[in-house]
Amino acid sequence: MIVCSCNILSDGDVKACLKPGPECPRTPAQVYRCLGCSPNCGRCARTIRAIMDQALIDAGVEPIAACNRGCCPTALEKAAAEPTL
Picture 1 (tube, helix red, strand yellow):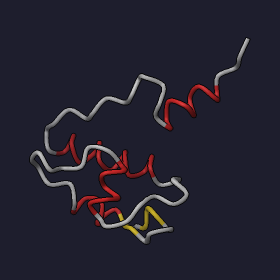
Picture 2 (cartoon, one colour; picture 1 turned 45 degrees about the vertical axis):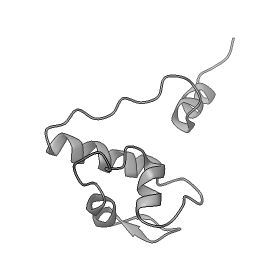
Picture 3 (spheres, helix red, strand yellow; picture 1 turned 90 degrees about the vertical axis):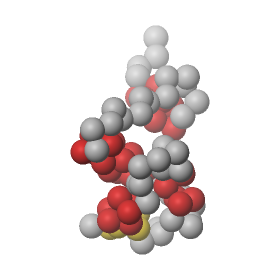
């Protein structure tokens, strides 16, 4: 299944670069670099993160916690979706 139409990356491409060890990508940005490309529109970042989390679960490893500092795109999206008073 194609997960990134900008770079024509499949779920198999993402899974292939998720090798155990210290050089294993820990973020979608690192997955892009591992695959020799960079994010364009960014719509696939959540899907790549979900593939990464599932691969970690399948390997018996705890998925990496989401950033709570408020600087990451997911945190900013969440904050933008919350109503302001």
